[in-house]
Length: 370
Image (cartoon, rainbow, N blue to C red):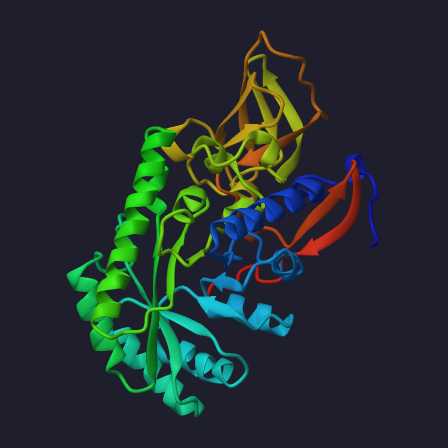
């Protein structure tokens, strides 16, 4: 590795990964899945790095989840072949790419409509494959993709199963609505209810002679509770690999579990109650914090500082005069509210151990949003 070897030599802003913490996060989630007897299929949208994905697989992950074909292409090129594309594939340009990929690996796909399923089936037939495996995306409360659990999803799954070239093998969901939970007990209950609805729908489909193998909820905040629901076969958390302010606010991690921080420099102290750092929305993204917490990130170890505003190149801190000293040139570490878009804004992450930069981690799937 060329470049600085000491953390203090890094130019800022820079996304820094504590590799010891990251490895602990990876091992802990793998152990959770093993103990619950479920497969772990982490979502790589968080890190977008084949190097990290391989570490997750070596720790016990059964495969990976991606959102877009672009991410799948990067991971396939790196030798990863057990991939679930958890996003509807719509449009001829994507279908042509899917046709090519199906000749390379046995992708599992997601659909939430007959229209998307019929289009995917055309690509499958053109590829020469007999069938492709699909999961039906179910809306268990997030109100994004999918139909509600129960009768609506059962009807959709049966219609998709009749399309030549597709084999319905599972149900999936994303419990993004857990971010709105008002307490940890409320989050746990909501996660269990959502997973149970997925399991019950799978049982109905099995009674109707559909061989549902995969029952796959996906979220970091709900993973510990989803994995314990009888009938769940797989979990698909993503953010856990780094964690962020949102997983801390939603009781899924502590500040010490946040492996990725943005190293940033104080570039101005225009007033006693204000400071400016060189990480703005082009580095941190402008995603709000879960639960409505104010500010755009946690300043590690500095509760007297709040990152209350962002512009493109500036982070504006409010400074508690009763707090510690803060001068131009000081360096701070920011835990992003939402780590996934922050990673997607950078070309490289700096992996560190004991204050030394030991490797550069290329964000190889950065911008691969098609």
